[in-house]
Image (cartoon, rainbow over all chains, first blue to last red; front, side, top):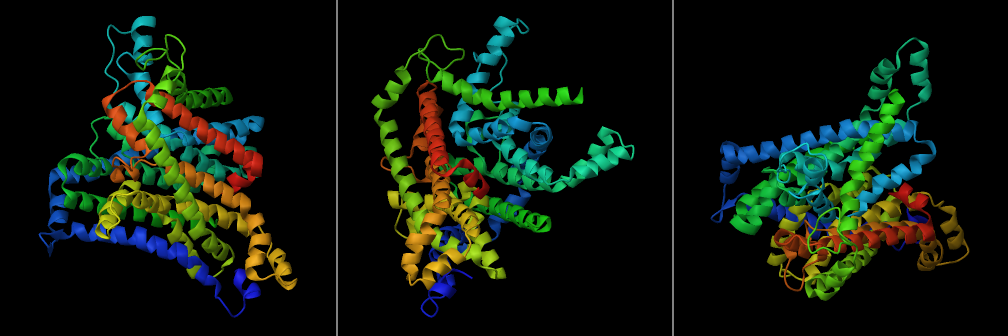
Length: 280
Length: 261
């Protein structure tokens, strides 16, 4: 079915064409990850489950894992809540503005992560725009608020990075919904709100699902935002970063990486199942 | 009423999305010696400062070299595979495609951390070679994905006709296939270049005097100082990305590219 059958019958089977990519990824993607996982099972030159036992019994480490999942879940839920109305507007009401909206959604993806965190720092610094507004211009507050290094700003910054993925995933599915179904429900006497809750929302569940897995997956691995904006979170990627830069306990960092990898693979598996079900 | 509330929400959403970015663009033109907004006056001094600060320039060169090499390598290894996978119907081909795209789904910090130890163990260590290899791992899926998508829309008879008329496989590829898949290669290369240029979680582990990329240098700079030169650099980077995007749009049409993405 490739170039090969018609153009080079006997000389070269077509599947050879995938070998460069396949061998490259096995050598420089799979082997490093396996090597890394093996290191997490090795204590003093011998096989040991020690680090995993420590990880799952020590409340500190267990806390890091739980916090990673909780933070990513919270970010995912917020992205869905904010992203859905935007996707709905884009598909149903934007009309000739839809091109602009898509551009505005994609443009932030072109900016570096450092640029965006820097923007948040300028906005929310002690003498930043928000504090100046609240204290000097509007006189609502007596003195500036401590906004940076709070969980709220860190979460907002993560949502800012990830919400476009959610909007685009939901919009793709919304676009495919037959609007006659909604009209039908309304003709049968359902209110707009009820039509939305009982027809549109369930039909777009796959879009929310795809977006949620994508957002969750990326949120799980992000650390630059948390390194720069603080917020007091202790997550797996942040922990790996700290283990590498300061503590230098590479064995523990390998263990944490492996856990993160297992979570990512689970997400990938769920994603594939969802895509297959949607028949894409 | 509901429609009005929805519109207001969408406007608020885009203020949220654009504010942190626009603020940085404005701050990059500040005349002040510190980063604050609103700015007291306009100047280009922070762009001059980038120019006069060697670590930034060196890192920019490093990043460009790595991004170009990683993109070229990505094309070389993934285009052949994409040509096969686009038309393969076998179940295992699907599995292979999923595998070849999987670096996109793995946490980059894990890829970076694991690669550092692995490449050091096999003697490649912290070097430009190591940077190019790991960047290729994370960039290759973009080229693969776009080329598969574009090649799927190319009807097989074009190539069959060339073969019937006596062109050998290489000539068929160069004169028929390649021009047809060029938009896919362009889009994939663009994503690959921008991804590599902006990469921090992988590059971070391979930092040394000779191998620090721009994001790595920016991160260590921003951790110690908060002057507007980072804003100026970010603005330049955004401008570069926009220019690339517009150029690609002019050459191949953004529609073709976003479909492929």
